[in-house]
Image (cartoon, rainbow, N blue to C red):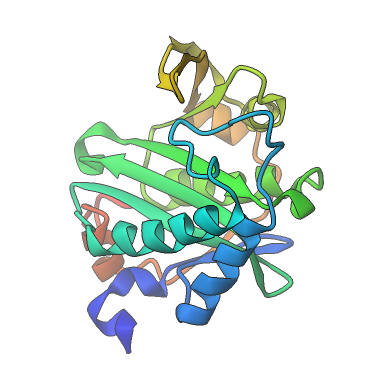
Length: 222
């Protein structure tokens, strides 16, 4: 089995409505690409720093498929981004990334995500972020989590506020030749504890998975 060689394939998170894990086969990657092609955001607003949806549905689908293979193929325990695919009713609906650099030292994680438009407005975006935050704080011993949202992306900002993040300054990246304002967000362990509302189950977080995340048994909280 692939998980024998890449233990991260054993890791999965479950919430009330969602399952987060790596795809089991190419068909699930294709289904994820189809979800992206069906639409992720209003075409008049670009919510991403890398505008991977800008060239239409076919290009967006291909971008998702290629990105997923790069994310796994370039895995580095010292600087990783875990590309959780989010499943609802057994079908991929989006991606929730949890990443870190030198996690054993920094104790800080970052996150990013997208979810198909057909599944927005139902609280699923908040639920999938809550899942990886539970992994970070309860499973990996993180002390801080960061995220970001572009000005105008009220839904993303609302998720961060609802989960206890506090404003952490702004950045002005250039996206598609235009200066944008990105609000940075930071969540502490204490604020996470105070805003926990979703039940999350972690499966498969063993010593081999922790090693791929740059941690030892003693450094994780599982």
